[in-house]
Amino acid sequence: MTAQGIPTIAWLRPDQLDMVRQLAIAAGLTITAAGSPDAKDTGALARPLDAQPLTDLRAAIATAPGGLVLIADPGTFASGRPGASGSGPNASARNDARSDAEELDAARDRGLKIASLVPLPASLSTLAQVGAPIVGARSGTLGLWCELLGLARLAPRFRELTELVEHFGPVQSVQVTMMASAACGGLGARLIDALDLCAALLGEPESVWAAHAGAEGGLSERHIATPVPEALSDLHGELALALRYEHARCASVLCSDRGGRYGLSVTAVGPRGRVTMTDHALLWLGPDGRSVDDPARQEPAPPPLGTPPQQSSVIQSSAPLSPAPPSTPFAGITPEALFVTLAGRQLRDYLTSGVGSSQQLDYVRLLSCAQAALLSARTGQPQSPATMKRLGGLS
Image: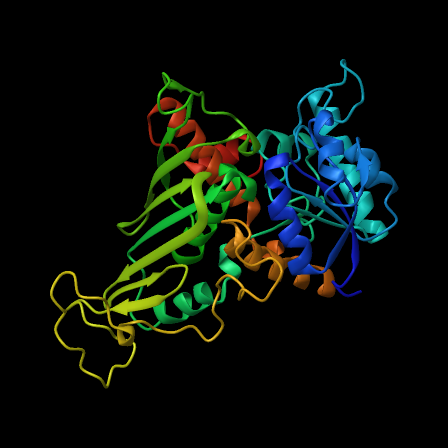
C-alpha cells in the first residue's frame, strides 16, 4: 500500500483545518469523512474538505474497512473519562478506556492505520486501566495506542546532532525548546516530544521540577491561572522543566502550544563544546567558541556585534528539514508548514512500511516523566518519574 490517495477519516477542531489540509497534501491522503469532538463544528469542517460529515469517531473506527484515521484532536475518545465512548452516562472510566483501546487494537488487526497528533493514552492512569499491550506497543509491552505524528527525533538534523555528539564525548547537559500552535496537537504532544529528545541524549532523569504557565483571558483582561490537568490531552500553555540525571548531568526544557510558528532548538553540551540544532542549522562550537565543522580550518575571530553571521560557521544538513518551496501546494499557508513537513514524512513512511516510527519510543518512560512534570507543576516540588511509574503499577 502506498501513501498516494489513501482514504482518510479526519477528526479535528476548526483551528486545525488548514494544517490537516496541508498534511493531507504532504502525505498523499484523500479525506473521505471528517468530524469534530464538538458536533456543531462537523458540517463546517467536512464541507471545505469535500468530505462526508462524521459524528462518531469510535463508530467510524469500528466500521472503516481500511485506509487511515487521522486524529488531530481526540476529544474524549480514549480519555478514560466516563461516557467518552458514547456508552451511556453510567459507564465507568475504566470500561470506556478499555473499550476504546480494544477498538483501536481490532482496527489494527483489520489493517486500518491510525495516527494521532496527541499522545494516546494521555495519562498513566488510563494506560494502567487498560493494562494490556495495545496498538503501537512493542511485543509484550505497554505503549502508544497509535502512531504519534511529528516526532522531532526523526528530523534528519537531529540524527546528525546525535552523530556529532559521539565525537565530543558524553553529553553533560541538554537544553530543548519546542514551540508550536495548538493546531499541532497541544502542549502534551510538545512535552512528550521534548522529553524524547532529552531521553535520546541523556536517558531517564532521576527527578523533574516543572512550572506551568497557563492563563485565561486576553492581554487587556484579568488573567486567571488554569489548573494543571492530569491528562496530556488537556494540557495547554507553557511548561518549563528542570531535569536531574545521575552522574551530575542535567537538562532544561521549555515547550508551548501558544508559540505560533512551529520550531525547535536543541543544544547538547559536552567536554568538546556544544552542538546546537535549530529549524535551519546545525552548529558545533568548541570550548574556545570557534566552529568545529571543519577541524582543519581555523575559524577567524568572532565579528563585532551587529555583523551578519558567516555561513561558514554553520554545518549544512544533507537532508534539510525546512518548509517546502513555494511551488508546492502546502508551502507557507500557515505557520505549521515546518511541522507538516516533518509529520508528512513520518506519515508517508508509516503508510508505506506499515511499521510506525513511534514504536521506537519508550512510551511508559516518557509518560512517567511527563506525569512527574505535571505533578511537580501542581505541588511546586521535584518529582520522580520512577515513582510515578511504580505508583501506576507499570514498573
